[in-house]
Image 1 (cartoon, rainbow over the protein chains, first blue to last red):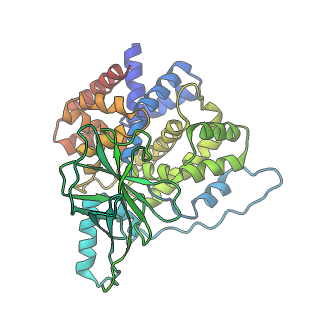
Image 2 (cartoon, rainbow over the protein chains, first blue to last red):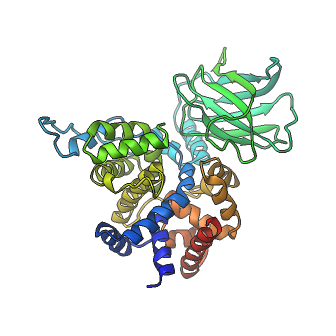
Image 3 (cartoon, chains in turn green, yellow):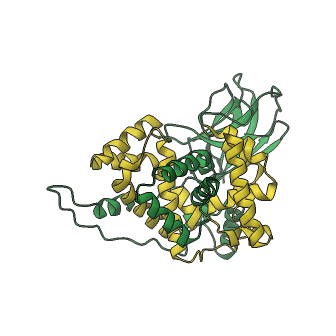
Length: 234
Length: 179
């Protein structure tokens, strides 16, 4: 096998497209201490690492750490009985809907609304204000993770900058990016499984370099900001 | 989320048998890592099993992590993705792929913006943009959702052999573009 073929194989392994047998063979070579191959795999993991941002973040089941800890080799002097595993319900687990992406979520919620009454929860709303307290965007959020924004007072954005939307739930230590708002857009929808909108959640739009904040945290000035609250009277 | 130097240090402690350090890695990374596994398996129970396997592997193999070769977060992502892919292979990849919207987010134009917003993501975005669209989509679908060659072929309505060759060529183009 040429060096090029070996590197392509390492790339396909990291990508995940190798068939089971080929993947096992490659893992055997790794375990046997093939340093060159290990280096090639690490290089591919580094190259492709930014793609991990495309998988929606999602909280694992709360009992998972206990299961992991129970399966670790016993620590000296500590005998821990494995906790019983509580299987999650497979059929109506709402998290599964959330994992399927926004359109599937919308379709799923629509289907739920059709087949059974859902207890009404007041929608969450806010108005994002400028630093001079001028209203700029109306925001409506539902607790499943969808946010809809409508501009009420379009503000020009410098040509070399973009608007990035962020959410900071109460108690969170860092805001979560909800994407870039096209500069000409009068409306914007975002959907996330990383956070659950709730009353008190901060919503803000910052000015960022093209492509969005390079650090994953807001780096530019806050243009508009507001805090979600329950719409009264619904 | 723990920053890279913290994670690298924690993995060093895990390699030395420090179980509290493993727990801190879990606390700092489990939401991100569970998301990776769930995007591949699309089943929370299976994703939990994958994360379980992955953390046992982390506890055994933390010594293999070499900070000189790459970031700790990338290494962890690799361990978790492979644990999830193993689960997927064990199930014969009989995972729900009939959802027509599966992967829409991964191949949407905004996806590349999200890639670029990551540390070191800008160059990858530029290089992904230089690929033909179907080639790029195939790579994104395989990475994010763990689709096999034949699933990518079905999804993109292309012959299997073409997809295999394209993905390989696309990877090598990416590598050359990023070097």
